[in-house]
Amino acid sequence: MELLQVKNLSKSFGTTRAVEGISFTVHEGRCVALLGPNGAGKTTTIRMLAGLLKQTGGHIQFQGAGTELERKSLLGYLPQSPTFYGWMTGLEYVSFIGKLSGLGASDAKKRAIELVERVGIGDAAKRRIRGYSGGMKQRLGLAQALVNRPKLLIMDEPVSALDPIGRREVLKLLEELKRETTVLFSTHVLHDAEELCDDVVIIRRGEIALQGSLSDVRNRHRRSLIELQLEEDERSLSWLRDFADKVSAGAGLVNGHALFKQVEHHQRGAMKVIVDDIDKAREWLLSELAKERVKVNRLEVGHSSLEDLFMKVVAE
Image (cartoon, rainbow, N blue to C red):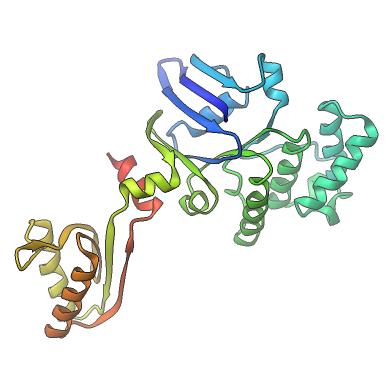
């Protein structure tokens, strides 16, 4: 079922067009990643969806909400850098948000206790927020976004401010949350999107460059790859340069068959090459490397990742 439908959404700041008529749909129960480089229009889009920024054009339709006020009541929102009243304790703040959301004092406190425990700051719940670390504030921000049991949880770069341990813990929590509610989050960390999301929307210069389910996007754009890492001696480096030049010139032929299609990456002793038949390409490479007495540190076969696709799309 369609939960959120965005049609021809645009936003201008003076003569600058930050978002250029984008359209996409978020289905109930899905986790959607909004991807793009810095300045692509992700945060502007997120703020329009959250009702914090008025669009210049286009429509945002939320299933079950006829007015903007009704739409906001069904949303949970976590900004990239949440701000708080430092003199409050974490528990007081989440309880305060509960009251603003329409809960009675008793229910608001009960919900606050439940949420601070869930996001991992229960031990610090009675400390003043001014003493919280950046990671603790991010968790507190997530708690307040969940107070009203939103049908759609919207987050802008939810783990960008966290250290590796905090990031891993919050990602685990988001993995649980996406089983309970629909999630839309923006990020430039491709690994997080690949780990969590069901669907992706890639924005480039305010326009949608690619969208679809992660599995469909992978299947449509997946390419077979072989990665080589050689010793940096003269023989090995010379062989790699010659091989890369041949492939780049369109001469990656073996017995008349174009096994090697394109050099994806090449610097000094490392190369990533797109291949046609991965088994035949690997077999030929291993034989050739042994024959030429090239010293190999690593040879890996696999397929292009979401990050490979992202880099290709945003560079076009």
